[in-house]
Image (cartoon, rainbow, N blue to C red; front, side):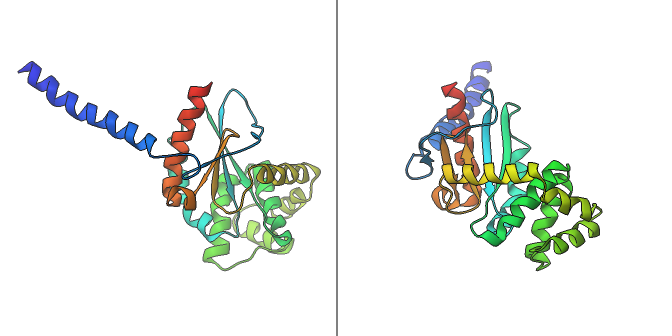
Amino acid sequence: MKRRVFCSLAFPLTLTVHTALKAQEQFVPGKHYVVVSPRQPTKDSKQVEVLEFFAYSCSHCSAFEPALEAWLKKLPQDVLFRRIPVAFREDFVIHQQLYFALETMGLVEQLHGKVFQAIHGGKQRLATPADIAAFAAKNGADGKRLVETMSSFAVAGKVKQATALAGGYKIEGTPSLGVDGRWLTSGPQAGSNARSMDVADHLIALAKKAR
């Protein structure tokens, strides 16, 4: 009886392992993700770094946000996640400044999602400092200070670094996920934005094995 119980437990376990291995095998370079060359710098060499390249103007990024937030809660402790705002046009640089100002002021958790809601749900462009100040004030933040922070030297430096990083990863669309300075995946490559997180999980595992 004990042997039968063991066998009944072993079968689903074997099936689970087989399924996991099969899932990993189906993600191949050049199809589901690309190898980034040259390798891009990461913030902390002791951690596996995951970057989300996004744009507030991107409706796909807005739709991706809830699933991404759920995925982030499951990431291992030794994985460092960072958001990298991208501007494909000069008039969207202000949104890069906005994100880094939110980050500097510790307002990402409070306002990041609301920026997407305002732009894509409320049809607010948030294209000027006045627009952004009014948005912040409406959502319980100091609009004047936020706009001032957007114009700061520190934020300018972060925008420059983000632009260089997006160039290094050769970002052509958003949302895209970069892993450990080595690989890049996205919805079109993975098959869907949701599946890009599965590919990222696979790449995180590869990065850990390489350490």
